[in-house]
Image (cartoon, rainbow, N blue to C red; front, top):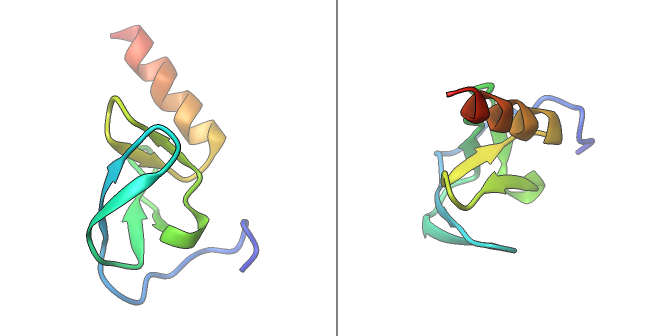
Length: 73
């Protein structure tokens, strides 16, 4: 799957614990939800997350947007 193709979840949402360079699967699933866009992210394509916030992001831009939002508060 190309990174820019939309991902349509087939199964259920996974529950993950985000670590510094990896994540731990707490509940099996095929996707997580981006904390910024609300779009599903295939677990195999998951690249961006925040350990401090325990959130996943669909792209670097989404992660940066969340960082800017938190700096404004």
